[in-house]
Amino acid sequence: MAMEESKENDKDNENKLVNYVILAIISDDNR
Image (cartoon, rainbow, N blue to C red; front, top):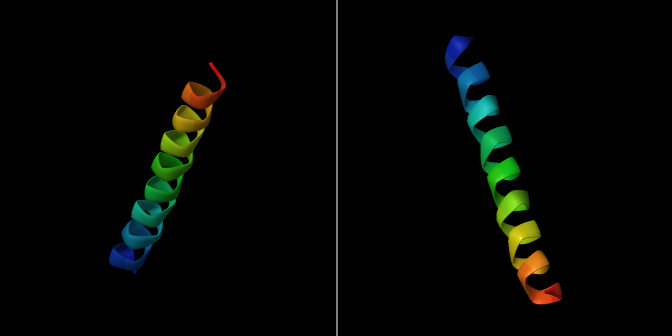
């Protein structure tokens, strides 16, 4: 169970990181 939760959190963090990177790239383009 703990492993499953950990995996979910990892995926969540990965998605947040991807979104952050995309936002950073978009911000750079708009500057």
